[in-house]
Length: 302
Image (cartoon, rainbow, N blue to C red):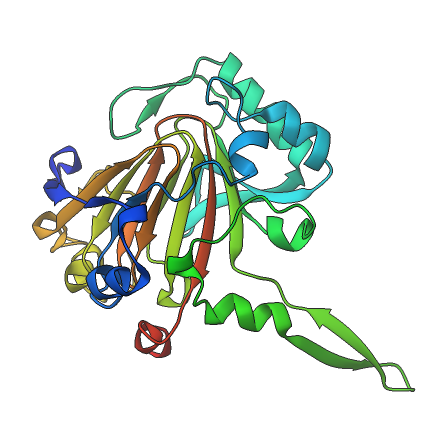
C-alpha cells in the first residue's frame, strides 16, 4: 500500500493579510464575503476588547489565574489532542479549573513542538484543548469583545438569541421554555494543541480572533475538497500530516493548500466550504463565531 509523504504537501500561497481599519463593509463584502475568499484582518481588536486585557498577562500569555478566579466553576468541553474519536478528537466535560490544572501539567511536562507544522514530542501527558465554550450565553453581563461590523449580519445567532422552543409536560400541559444555544465560542489551547481537518458546521462562515498566542492554518479551496475524501466520498482525511494511504485517498497528493500564520490580535475570516486544519504554535485563546447570511445561504441550504 502506497503512502503519501504529507510533510511535502503542496503549498500554493499564503492567505492575504489586510488592515481591517482600511476596509469599509462594502469592500469587505465585494472582495471576500461575496467571493467566498479567506482573509486575515488586522487592526480590529485594538484597545476596546476587554478580553485583550483581562485574559492576557503583560507578557502576552493566557492569564490562567484570571480564568480560575472568575470562571473556574464553568463546565466546558475539553479535547484530548492525542486521541482520535471517529472524525474528531476525544472529548470530556470538566470544570474550567480542572482544565487549567491540566494546562499547568502540560507546561511542566516539557512538551515541545518539534517543527513549524505544530507536530509535537513529549511524555505521556496528553495535550488538552478547551473547545466550543458558549461563553457569551453563560456570562451575558461580561462583555468580553465587540463583534466587528464585517460579521454582524449574523442570521444564525440572531435567530438563536430570540428563539424559544415550547414543550409540554405533565397533565396540566404546562409550557416550559428551552433556550437554544448559540454558535459563539471561546477556545483555549496550550502550545501543540490542534484541530483536525474539517469544514465548519452547516457550511457556515466563521471568524476566529486570536486574543493571544499564534496559530498556523492550512486551507483547501472548496473546488478541491473532493481530494481529501475516499473513493466513496464518505471518509475524510483526519490529519494532513499523517501518513495517508494513496489507495484509500487517491486524490490527496494532488491537493494544493493555502496557509497562514495568525498572530495575536488578528482575525481570520473562514468562508463557506473551505476545509482547514489548525495548530496552536503558542498557548492561545481565541474567540470564534459561526454565522450565515444572504451571501452564503446557498451553501447552508445545500
